[in-house]
Length: 409
View (cartoon, rainbow, N blue to C red):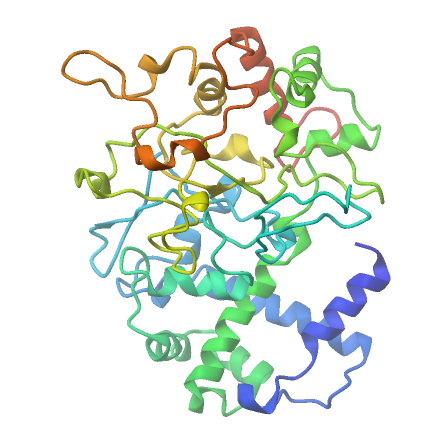
């Protein structure tokens, strides 16, 4: 982001809250640039403390970082398809934990998304794109942060007042008062807004969540060369007749020189196999339909959105241990192999009936089968060889942040 745009953003973020939001911040309406930067840094640090605080859960043992581990690209720290939470840490979640890196760039959800002039062809309607989470149901990071706080399968707090009460006992309570006013805890809704705003600021910290420090970034800067397998993998990734990965996970520098985010923030139905390890799937009538429900409510029953989930960024994908919204596979190679084999070897991926027939797309009602992606690399003829899959995995490993020129992570 250019310096002037970054400065403008920080100053806007640092402006005092409106009167309706609760107590005013402890300065005037137009802070200096120095004050704006200082406040942004202080709020982000407060957010960091909140992010790692397990007392903001009903169990007292589950922090945001419990599921969003920095060592795994702020995704799950284990290979469970979903994580365990709730008041006694006995409840199973329903979706795999999404990574949080580079999430600050997600645009607001739109049913008709057009790229900016800087990013690409602004005349092309991409369709539905944007929002946060697997179904894009909230637009702001602060609203996304509130979801696990109240989810009965996650942090399971009863309400905003319970979160504020816990925060008021935290070692950072004085920081909340200093940043949001000494009377902030007298206004529970304002205090809760302060908590989620601080969590948002922390997740907007470039050095932590979007450092652009992978080997691929060094390659784009001309500082390092890709190995032969990595270069072959990039070629397969970009080839519309083979991997076709870049159609959703953009790999090229934008027109105005910004590094790629490896997502177009769009939605797709991949026809994933049903994950029998999820307790929710013990009910044969239960289906997670993504954008059309059951957790997103504004498109309930809108058939064209059923089975669609947001394409995540592939940055730091090699640090993950569960993939796709239902956590059905657990290695990068499995995740890539699914694309290669879904239609050519369905018996490897899907359940079979008593007569031995394979039930493809068994995690989506037949009524929505038309939504499932069928273009390359899917299709009757296999477009990705085993060698291609290996090369793609090698390339995806170059997207892990923390690379140092010379080969050390």
